[in-house]
Length: 263
Image 1 (cartoon, rainbow, N blue to C red):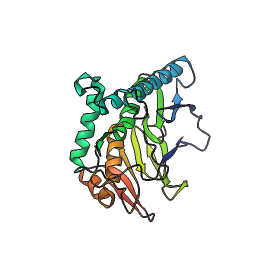
Image 2 (cartoon, rainbow, N blue to C red; image 1 turned 60 degrees about the vertical axis):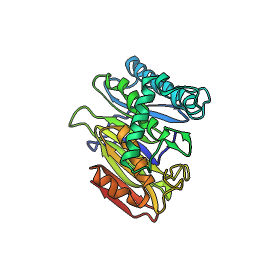
Image 3 (cartoon, helix red, strand yellow; image 1 turned 135 degrees about the horizontal axis):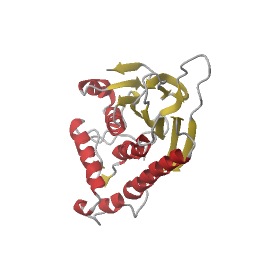
Image 4 (tube, rainbow, N blue to C red; image 1 turned 135 degrees about the vertical axis):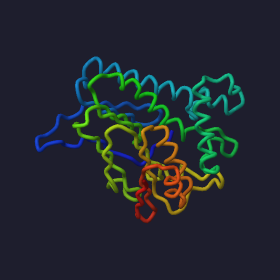
């Protein structure tokens, strides 16, 4: 599972008086920090804690099935040829179908089967977090922002409530931000090399993209945002044009710090 270059979540103040601080939860799952911010009716009561536990259970199950670091995972066994795809849980076929669509759409720059190795990590994180957020959607009168290593899905119920502020790190200096994106309900994902150098490559060449620092995508679905951010980053100099052609909204940061707003 890869950790992108998006960080910091906080509510936007709606008035000079300080807004109530959201309740926050953090757990380490899937090899990365998972954090949750809740505000509204249920933030630290039994209903909130149960929803958080259910969300974590979804992520732990995704790790059990999809982790490429666990030799006993379903995806590891499938990659070694010990299982046929037809013998795998339906979610495996779902994730692989998303990966195949991304391969076609990116002309092969994004590929979960690269160099003879099966690795759907570029799909799984956003997909799993989106599934985990279903447990939070059932909590009434409560806004949430669920983050996995920096990729986020958020909900804001009432039009007058403040949006969530999502900070996008400068890939040249992760200690500063290049943008702050207000999100009410939707998802944000970023792909880049600020935290894990050269972990995303163009599958057609096996090489990391040149001239690019990071790609951030905003979409209603975190699965879409995560996959498109990774595919666009793999495309390197073609990232902004590719996202624009797909009708996406986002931010492309070049290696020299020049930013391009898409959409």
